[in-house]
Image (cartoon, rainbow, N blue to C red; front, top):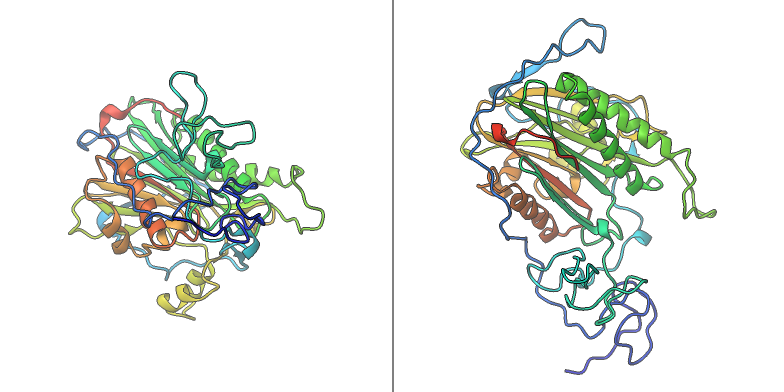
Length: 436
């Protein structure tokens, strides 16, 4: 069927000439007919062993960080009824972590990254030649400018969609449907401990959209925190102390970016310090440790869905501060346009860094969900999250992470979305070392 070209590309708004088949700027196929709405991924991936109890590490008492002489707190799973935004004193001040400015959005148009169901979302290497092939037609070679020589499609950047699966954890990150780039980052790893058991690490960082180079900030924070944990945990450092120190290392890494000149600096645009949030979990034996700065979250979802799920972190945000001070109800605060103004972040212009850490000993098997607000915006309460986590998440972690990302995209995908799924407790045969 004949089709009249629009005046501008529906993907990048580049002016078009009559008769153009492809956009000269982004390679968008102007003859393509929009397909059906994108569905949540459902392809199976991986399969873990049954979560039998793992040997517990004989951890030393965590170091005294605040001069109180008290060890790090450990709470039983039965003591965690689910945390709402109604506790804890929060620091003053706020920084916007809401949607980016309109000029950072691409128009909502058919996403050329996944033209067919089940097609990989990043270019794959051709088995025979080792060259990358087009994500759209799956046959054309990619030229030096990043376009398919066969169909003309521009290829997605590597960071637009990322997936990683280890034996004990899986993570997925996606650009979403409105952002022009992915400003989230993650790191997952499994590392051997002195007693022969293993610890599993999941870190998710969300770049602050109003900051300069937020994508670099999140990548630097995730890498630095992961490297710190891979060094301290095998040395016998208590996981809670190790996570506290890892957050500080991540903060230092983000702070150092402020001293580096941006490669694409625009002299007419205001520059401020790169910034991001961070949330992480460490699982070892029967112990679950979480740590965070900002408004990314950790959820606990039991395998038995009749049991109570929990949110294990408390947002550093304007909404949480309003609720904690009794100025608004939770529903009212999170419906406000200022809800996502964060009151804690990593960056050179942050207020005094206050890493939050907590330890738990869940009394039943389940999964740990570590995610950015790009996911929890579409499943905010612990019960909402439990409803969208697949029932077989403990044995199909990557599949579950894909489904959760798909849930956010189906809900609108207005933000980058990143999630790590960690089965708990970790089977003992998963010991070893693997780095993201």
